[in-house]
Image (tube, rainbow, N blue to C red):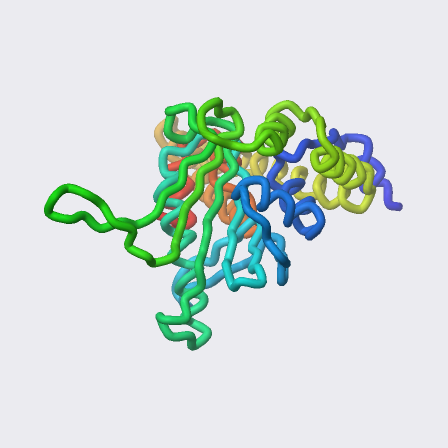
Length: 291
């Protein structure tokens, strides 16, 4: 082990399942992922065909790629995209729309006909209430409206599910409530959450994973520091206060955009990037082309 890796290990602090990188690593294990989906959806899944952590999906040659935390397909050809969301984001509904659209277009890009589009569920597991009504689960689907004002399901087999881990309303199972409490408080009260906690502990104790995690974190911290220094240097070269200010802003902007791009391509969620760079999520969204 190198000296740098030793330093990384000394600096590492254990993270919980709320952490995006940890969540993706845990859900890469089918024994953790399958019961997670079953608990959220309240239904049994016979078999997970393939779980992929941080699946990259590209629309076209000119379009941005996106990273999905957990991308799964079951034996019934249903596609699931599961995302951990720990920061409030006003654009979450639009983000879910974007993700669902890109899943469909990715399938069609492989030559499939519209009739063969798979049922898809985009699931955001939130540590906050995304809509403010106290519900545990918000299920969103497409409907059409009749002249009498009633609505009928469109039948496009595309669903968006927003899970509020801090909720208190809704007909959900005891297992669901226990899982939500584990996500929010880290309290493992049944065999499944104990399995999750054991997995999290194992990962947190894995030196290779810790080095990888810290390498990522240190790199981002370095980029942030360099961005500030570059801005100062460009400002000094101008020789005037206006020039210094413009230089700082331009340098900071370039470095911030580069950092945002690197984090996004590395699978980081928009809210985490925004918090790290101390910028509005809307700004980050525009930079990475997700609006």
